[in-house]
Image 1 (cartoon, one colour):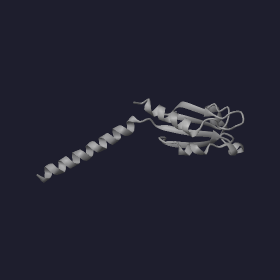
Image 2: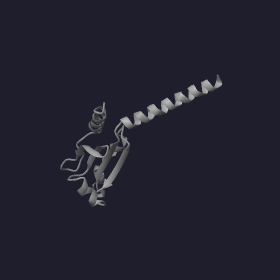
Image 3: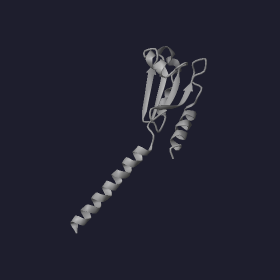
Image 4: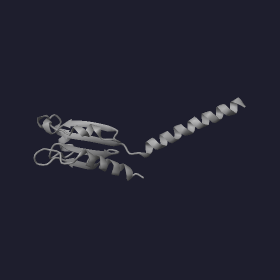
Length: 119
């Protein structure tokens, strides 16, 4: 009898672990990168780090990393790019005065829409 109870508990734990692994693989890996430069620090986008449902946040100073500027085709700073599974899916850029036009809410809505498109 005790062996049967132990097996049932073990089976329940294994089922829970299986569903957790399945759920973690079902959601996209979201990454947000803010591109800016030290000379434009007054126009940094501080709310980028507060975005929800992102696995990674990064800041790239294109004055220090010109290769990143070329690779991601950064024309104006700050620029915020959202990546899903390594592919760019959304981009938000500053206006001609180097100030971010998009709001935190707009960027978060885009992240939410991207995640919902997986369902």
